[in-house]
Length: 108
Image (cartoon, rainbow, N blue to C red; front, side, top):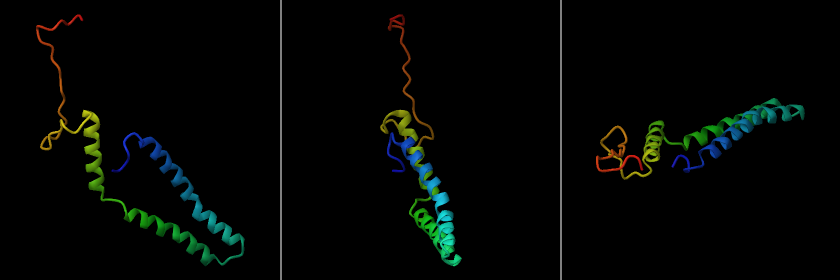
């Protein structure tokens, strides 16, 4: 649920793009307002709305423990290809190892 499978890099790039835009946008708005002879208190209020928006968006996220648990589940599914081979009581993922028998031709 954190990220759609196969779109991790795309969403990481979008995240970096958004953080770059949002990083300089409030100071830019403050500068425009001050240069337009608007009182600085309104510039500070506009800049504060950026922090309020960030706090509201962060409050919509899950807890850190939920995110880590989901990431571990997704990593385990990625290693096995499916969730059918997972043992919920085991701490590691089971591996299906094929050992050749004496009857098999090893040169083929």
